[in-house]
Image (tube, rainbow, N blue to C red; front, side, top):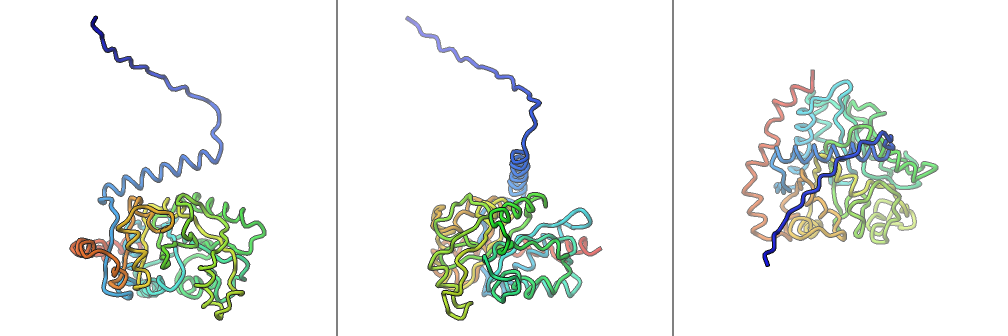
Length: 326
């Protein structure tokens, strides 16, 4: 008996419904469109995780500031067309902020048509408290540039409804069209913002109860009195940062070397939050020599061999910036 293999193809005609899509689904669709566009842009630029190894923290700060200048200038923001920038706090980005202030004072960069979204804020600290991130951003950056106060977004840790505040923040990012470039730093345990080890890698902006290790690490900012460190914070989620079209993470110092090695040389692991960015279409880690101490020699050699290409990423600044200053 002979058997005849028959392939049957069934065509299902899509049914067009007139049912109105609810707003959350519309937002999800728009987000998907942005992700597809980011992947497309990543393909055009040669999507890959990039590790940029520089001499020391001061060179990292200068390179990062020039990269921000390059991206803003290329975008050429103007009325009704804002560049959207995600920003961190802490010691690592201070040098970058100072260089960006220099660029503004030199007339090379304007923040008039830039919107910013900060990563996190403590719960319960007054805005004028020296350790609040509102205070940090105002004193270290915002008061020195021409950004419109309404365009500088920092989570409100004193909001009467903290969950609603987190939802509002996500909605503002969505309404701004998503974040073009999110700049971040990490801790020695690989956390980004207040996404500590064990955080969901698809998390959104939320209220976070801080781990004891975080309280212990941060008590130095509160007179070494752990009882004064806020127990909770508002933080963007890993998924929030991953939604950005491009992510730049600054890593300096030998104390962060293990986290960098986990992020670059091992697999994605929710116990090392920063490792999630291996899966981002346009992620770059900018580090100093000290931060590479735990990397394999061949890893360091590979990325250092690309240093000329990495310099090209900021070499067009003087040309591109002309478009943003008119």
